[in-house]
Image (cartoon, rainbow, N blue to C red; front, top):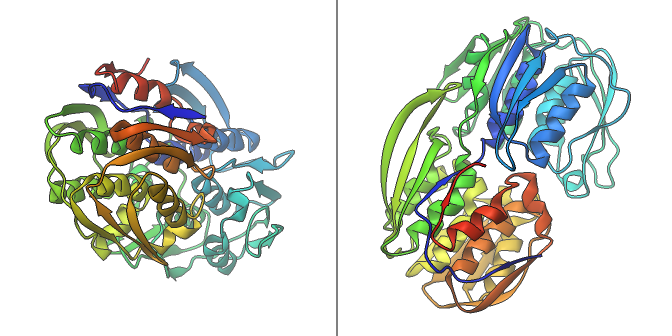
Length: 440
């Protein structure tokens, strides 16, 4: 259990751990590459370590070069030149939907049988959105889950053919899975997105020497390309920074600097929304690492006002909705979040989880199938919070605990935070007392 009390004084500066999305992709592409790749700043969260271990089970050699107490680690990864070997057991993805879906794309092309498993939460999440297009490329999937279309997934891979696939739902995970499979397929594989999604895969392809054509919402990759070893620096995770951005933005008079964080434009929609709500940002650009723009963010807290989240903002804001809901609870007026039904099938039903816990701390909120309407500006009260085993729910309501008018917040099942941000608890304790948080 994690207990959170109101802040005494907000911290002045923080460094966040490595980007989770980039770490997953670095483990996979370096593992497929020809040669030895140096990956600095890899996030040692449970999710990313599951993907790394899975690649090791498939024949990839990994050496840990440097590590910290709870921050990023440096790795030396010897790739297989696209020649993976059959694992001796199941590949456990833990709680990671990203890991399972991306690995499914790679395993779809292998001439051996494999089996992807995960924890109870992951095995309740729909996998048909990746298995359907991968089966149309020639792979065979057998869903062994209690729910139709869910993991465990038994995969019989082999020779793949290229496809042109129009995604019914905007998803960077689905797009990336198909593009990874496309590296092994004959011809050119094209994915058409209904809306722009995170482009970490396309950017990292370039670092590993893979040609990828982007034409609006259409992304194409030719099969037969072998990634070449590369040296990467994983940027700070914007989704981890999001919790501190909201904490500072909702605290009038505060100034918080978040250092060396990734500023990929497909990730920073939260800043656009917070600016609309009244927050002020100053960006110091620091160039790019691994194809990802990075910089320092200075956020100045103001009194926030409610807003309406635009439909086109949702795909690149989807992971930040729980913490955005906390910003809405602290803002004056009404905030509307709709067109976000995808949240129903994340680590938990995040719409239900957010609404339930907002009501527990005294927030007036109305739930819809695709989102919620939040009436903000009223005092928050202490309560027992149910994380539902979801790391982003736990961390979002930990930030709410900094702004209580009375009592404290007790977050049940807070161990789930380690799936994405192992050092969050230590960072929270330092931040709430006015300290400066560095990666140890």
